[in-house]
Image (cartoon, rainbow, N blue to C red; front, side):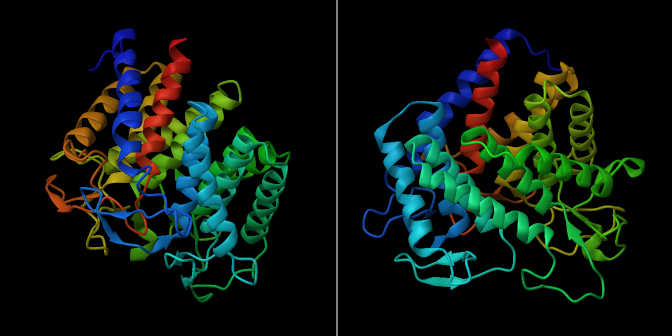
Length: 394
């Protein structure tokens, strides 16, 4: 069992700070800023060379959020503020369709390629706008962030506003909507403020606990029937441990914001416990991508791969659980996931992390950036852990 001494905590604090500022951020910036068309060029190989100049709207918003957040919380570097503006301006000028909804995939110069049926492009635009509004002091941008958050609330709560992907034969809902909206509201509240956030966050947490957390089988479901029951078909049985663990730390973060609310601490830790048990690879280490709730075969062929982001979310969750409970179990888990991830994913030669490993830890592809991976999960993890440890050690 790991014993977390003050010296150990200081080591992690300094490690995450150094990795973020000296390794992760320099891999992406300034070279990824598109000075010609705005936004960011983020589809990159191991050495940082460009493999495609298309732009994913999710990652444009996330990268703008990151740069503005660094400006707001680390140092007011003009290049971070200017870099955030590049992303926010690209989102505003190119990424909204005529119906007010956002695209998902753009050409370099801002022509739309693909639009999806859900509204996560909008949620990442909200956090980018809110963080940039705080950094720049621009009240119009703050109003825009709040207005777009209001649209997300409508999309999530008013059936029929968005086109359906499935028929009504087997209705289902996913944990992603309440989870991502919860974190969007947290970011909005903590940057520019919005009076709607606390009430909605409470609603989303209640929905997750009521419908997705299954204490009787020690599990957090990825999707369920509208009444919260398990859908005993292959899609309905598929678990995503990293996603549930990300939701766990969002809830633990909310507990911190509510004077260490004991119920939320318990809920977040239960979610982490259940999905560590199901997701941690006891043979090779790391968090597996998909599992079946009943231990049956999983449909997706990448089910036993190790993707970068579940490791990032588990690093945050285990550290936060330890800092909030003092339970050395979480210190031990944090050391396990930290050691595994930084020894297998980190590219010591070029910086940043590879995105995709086989189950045994061997490299699947040298990709560092694509439509889904960019400067978000890893830098957010390093920034959050550094900031949390700094606050804890004061």
